[in-house]
Length: 257
Length: 222
Image (cartoon, rainbow over all chains, first blue to last red; front, side):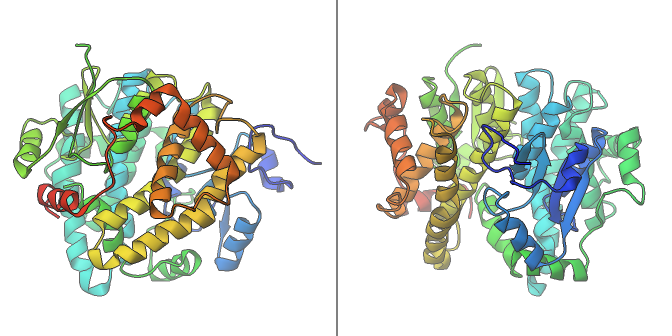
């Protein structure tokens, strides 16, 4: 049956059976990458989702040829009749839909500032495995230094000053979910990264205990493990990364002082 | 205290230009405080005005907003340039993020390593021609309307016009295969607020030259 969608330009002509369940369908490879924040947010919101994970370049190209990827890129999430692409567009849609985006324009602004800062940091951590061997240690130190001097102090201060359990508006928002995600990513780089940040430590414990989030943190959930050598190789093959991409991608971040 | 927004950045396009465009299109007058030397940047940081010690920063409605997207989202929402519902916002966001990716590629020409300048220019032109321009042409073709989303002006029409002008600076014939984009460019350029912004003497910033780049490198310690 041909489905018509008046305003949406990129709906596939033939829907796979998965999307008929009404659950969002996530299209990505079997790894964290840029999809992981989306998994976190859906999970925190208590939304069940399906995943179609491609294993190699051929499967990715098949997806591209299917015409559902506006820019030929993933992440892509089929949701509410749309084929959403672009990580932030997807996150924002989910956050708004499930009441995780603040109650007014000012709260939205604070959430946006916080998540954008976290995105800068998580991108740096994400690109670390793509360091050239001779840069690896230097990049690692750089990222941790940034985390501990530029980013974590901001969130520590926010929690300390507003004396609340959440970053914005005294209730759980997208910013809190992403902060927990990034704290855990940073701890994988250095277990003691939160020493000196008692409010963040407290935040981590409390937020991990929220039932939906706690479930996501259990083994067997759809949370993906960190990149190992094998999955890095697969990612490079699928996305055609090169080693040495860390510095290339950092040039715009470095330029912002 | 109500007053004009104040933009803190260096006197160049960089990551502030899309914000200038959006405010101008919304008919909002704004002031600018230019960062001319490292000391200016240090003062802003010392005053605690920059959440992540970075600019752009915009003082607006009693807040000191940082992060380009946070600022754009605030302005777009405040001035009703963000669509009428969640689905329109989703489309606007999808299109905007693609535009930002393309703009970032062009920014990298300037901020990247000098020996990669030519490669970065090629990459930006290539991706514009093969990925982004076709994607937006397709959107316009799919609904045949004058604006990208919701049959009325939204932020993304402004963002798109801005980036179309940039790609033309790289290659003046780059839009020839895209008649609908040419049409949009012409239409949006004629809107009164936009037209004013396109005139000489507005707060729109010129393309980069060596002097501007050198200054930025000093201020931002690249």
